[in-house]
Figure 1 (cartoon, rainbow, N blue to C red):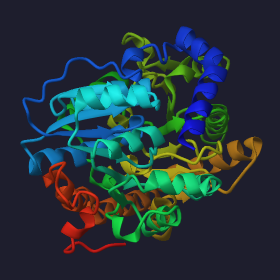
Figure 2 (figure 1 turned 180 degrees about the vertical axis):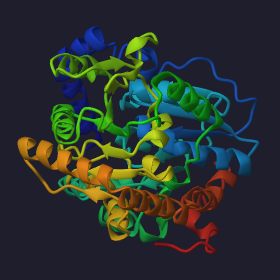
Figure 3 (figure 1 turned 180 degrees about the horizontal axis):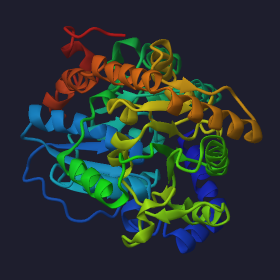
Length: 454
């Protein structure tokens, strides 16, 4: 089955090669770090100290990993940290977030046995930690062969992913059995990974480490810089549209037009932050034809800094603007992509609005809805969504008391759920203290009877 998987992976990459070449030429994707993706890593000297390899996929996982990494290095100061990502944007953020914490920030290798082996030989990790759900069969198999313990941390398994994995259940069971430990975000996530064949004794629940994220001091400086340039918080309320996908930008622009028509041109300002950098140009073209006064974050400071609409066409700056927002629409939720993280705007007490498609964060959304800590739109067609979004924007901006109460409940919910990083590190401690020849390596759960299981 592994041979078939490797063949299909190769055929898939060949089939997608034209798209890869297009994205590489048009957007600069995939070229950066190609040698690393093939397992050829720069020289790495750990000074003989044990290495924690922490793998994140993209921006969200990278930012979520920061409090966990800080706690790990605090509890295990003799260890080195290596961080890997898959996407270009994740790599950029990781280099910023872990600039003073990680010994190296690398690209994760393509999941061929030979490229994985080269990478593992270069890093020689004492433990591998995988954020959320990145189950690469050849990588996990090679870790088992080399007796490198692997833990899934902040594990998340949506109902859709669970159904897809079950289509190849026998193979999936072999993959998940490579995990020494799966520390899941919720009981539902834990039930699903057990349903894929992982032993209950190796499944734990810690909560979501994203609740633990604090605002770095450097981000406060960035907030002040953005405020000084764009004059946030002075007069008109700010609506932030975060991590948007097509056609959400078009919906938001139309909703913003309707809001201005109903409440006057000074009703609010709009900041749009597309999820993927390759869509900055597409969003700029939309704004060019919108008839709205707009500017780019990347443009030099000037007279248009008071524009009605700001395109945040930079990476890693979105969190710095949440504190100025009266309303935050979290994208990927009208577009059926499963939604994005609501915890970052919630942590600063913003009033959050999402669409109906939030399957990627089921447990979090359930908690927020039960606490009346955000507003969720029904499932709507594009034309209906613009009208409904404009109505919700108008209602919330007209009702300061309700808007602030929703934001306060969101912030309170974040505070109540902190502590997942501490609990996760406690669960990981037996793995981090083991040596490769320790007899308990295959069953790390034996060393943590003091921690409640799922």
